[in-house]
Length: 127
Image (cartoon, rainbow, N blue to C red; front, side, top):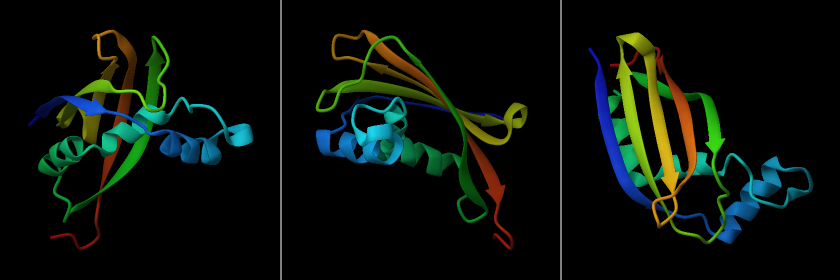
């Protein structure tokens, strides 16, 4: 049985302090905009609600298994963007949820497309 959900378009934005904190942790020299910045947009409440609706959290732990990014432009701090996500789970992906995301600037021009795979690990003794 497959399950799919579409979320968005959502307003997303990373403040300069958020970008700086991420850069400190992942970039040599600790400055700039990390290429992995778009992954933080998956913390948006509507994306998290869709994941919760697709996952029995009493029986599974969600593990971030893989991600890939295809940039058509740059993402900047303190700039508004729109993001849409297609979330899918089903027999063809096993115990996984895949998320296909597109980030566009406010004019609708695609800036980044990214793919995320989340693995669902069973919790020992889960209800």
